[in-house]
Length: 71
Image (tube, rainbow, N blue to C red):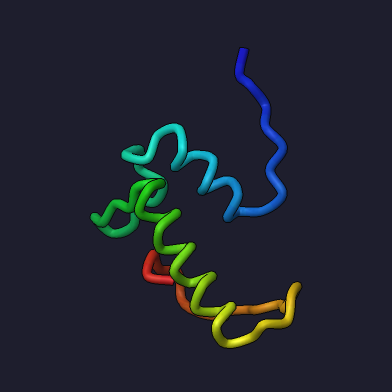
């Protein structure tokens, strides 16, 4: 039986997966693979950059872009 976890957002899901299996592939796109560990690290870098731009909590952000693993 699989263990269920409460996940509030995608960042929390990536962080959870990275803690248990950081080398597992999270995203495969056009021959490139990103592991959960890499995804968690990059998400943290983006979050820190956004915090540096705005100190207001709960600020919403949207991105409209083509389908890609770069974003």
